[in-house]
Image (cartoon, rainbow, N blue to C red; front, side, top):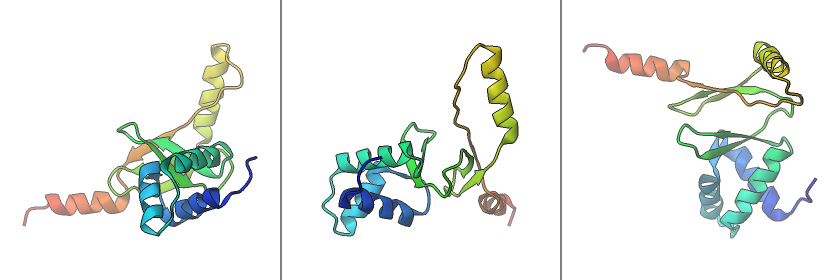
Length: 136
């Protein structure tokens, strides 16, 4: 485990404040807007460390950018993520766990790991989109 520095704690606090998935650049911008002199490379390193230790979730956006979020649980989990507003819900997916172990074993793999994130529209964004489509 890495030692806690003021930079690492600043990144952790900013990630908690973000409330959802955010890029390193977005987090860096928020830190600078609040007066922090922290460098972008330091933000990247701190986020990578937090993700590796299970203190942050990490995923790739549909555009391929790494996004991070403060993790509410250290247990293995998956996400439902709204493509429109970014709402993220942590979910358990026992069927995915069983399938992943089975497929790995069938192909002679051991110590298999996986990441499953499901992107869609949340109920609020679906309702808003339906309202926009309704005839006047």
